[in-house]
Image (tube, rainbow, N blue to C red; front, side):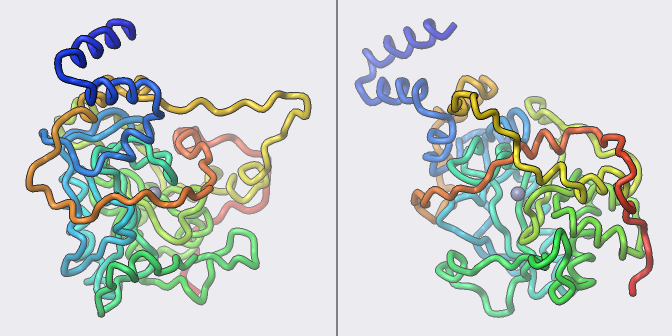
Length: 345
Ligand SMILES: [Zn+2]
């Protein structure tokens, strides 16, 4: 198959010139994250998530406008405010609801996806198909942030870093809890990822309806922002759904596991093992339709206002988050108390 592809690329290139040949060759040698990381505009096509959250791409994305009445997009230079129209609409709706809950004058939105989705040069494992969005745990201030402020503003962690996995009670408020639960309340939202300490805090203090608490999932990081994931939109036949969260509020052994040593233990190294360079994800590892998404003409008149500037590589640890998300809760030995619901102090 591959040789056929190469052959047709060569034949096409012979007819159309060297530029196309260079592009075709690059597609076979460059990791997929470089190809998708270089796309500045979405493809001109109907909106479609293709593949799965951590292995896929996106056709026909639209951008969250950089500024709305109840939101601002952050870190504009990353050019990651592209998503499926259903997610963009949800974020706009959520921003209104958050503001109504007293969350400043709305939300600050972090990364969504690249213009054509796909793997990223740094950061996330998921966010590849336009159905994931990060929202800061800092509300939008009344005075809009300038683009430069949106580059520079530091994240604020909700954790007390002097303790093990503990929410900082000087920062965390009932409004934070309400905003996270609001995000989980929409039927199209399948998961909201937060730090395990935040999930525990919600388990201990949430007095309202707990039906949607099970959608709030503990995961590494996510102490400075929370992460909203919607399900595959209706009719998105190339979108690979993930398993629904189980019944219940998730304040169970699957949460208690995070408070054991296992998730934080350094992987044991075999001193005799040869260092293995991790294999890069190539375009051919993604669903076939992603090659067409990459090659498609850019959407005309789209409102990508920021030129893509390559950010400095950040050595963010990319844990195998998706594997953890998918794993079934394990039976555990008795390892201390499982957090149980209790009223507000
Ligand atoms: Zn995220």
